[in-house]
Length: 562
Image 1: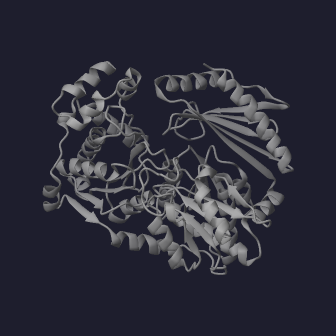
Image 2: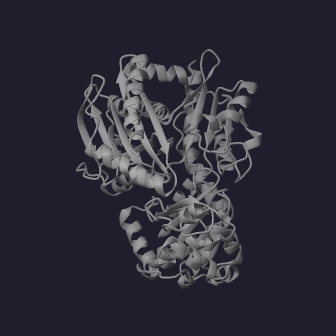
């Protein structure tokens, strides 16, 4: 069926509500109609993510119901025990997140599956914790994480508290494919589902337990608890849990950006609510200068990612990227736990294949193994799940360059709430020693070498953009750059053909003769192709020069591919 046929079906079928039809009738651009209907919103291992709107390639009540029916059948296939264990559902501040979560709960209830639905917005890591705490078979969180305001999404978790891997995703996809029309999707009335005990609301009791377990993971008390912190939740879910854990940890000087304190699905003060982008700190930086803060932290809308800015010795505020913050946390956690005797002999850290190697160098100093996985915490935390069974290693810390971190095994996903406590504890520890975080990072570089990194994202939206990204990957796969200045290509890893033990993935990684490397991959959640560039040198100037040379050559080749 072509996209215009699908468009007409949505206009003519009585199943679709009048508001949806009115939205579709108002579209005058044929390209917009094509983009909404040329494909179905893809359900992958990250679940669903897309722009909000009517159409098969959009986030709406129908595409959410369709995905949930596929999940429901996957659970039903496992029998009554799985159905009784049920599904936990959380949602963030985005437009329609509460509506989509309720739709999902009603679909599950209609299929006889018990659902635990949060009574208000919650961070994504709380969902991961809840799946494990309530022993549910699955979990859903309705969020688009750090995407622009036009987006929403739907992530599915499995019984170990991690996002689903390919095996489960493929099973859900197969069940979705068996649904011929939206009218086949079952949905129970909300009040009826609550009355029958198929939908149960949950709240404070889970929050309290999650908060206490984070506090139990504190490492060091020899810290300056009067450190001045500016925090912004960027109008997301982090406001209450982050402030609570910092307050109960004993930090007395936390100032919150007032314009970004409360939920706002329009993200009026920050159009792109991603703290990985330094511009997201504009309001926090202004307030930080006013109150002379030592450190600024920002969490994204679903509070699974966190970034920081720290004041240097000259009073300037310096932004730390994900690799730098990750390396600082590795250094702090391992050194502090080594000093207090709580570092296990089989300790291990886990990072993604596109995350820098400074953390690995630090871990080697403390005799800690480093493991690499594909991008995504579903892969990083799969190691925690594996070691929980085998006892081969103790999972200490997992991280990736896109400002995602998790400490210990409380949750099986990135967690900005526990990370906020660790980051402030770390800064408070070094402040008591008379050092700021910029000085600490410089000390690390002096010991381990000057590592630089750069992430470049090329946005290519729509049908043609998706096709061009595919052509870019094909060209790089067939004809890689053999030399960049005096750096020669020494080794290539194509993760579609990879034999390192990872799942197959559309990622290309190129190692150069001087120890630098870069990787190219399409984003799994946004219309982008990403280039990750890394270098190491004896001084920062040379390290950055190498980054610039690699960037120039790689982007020139990419942009030449039409």
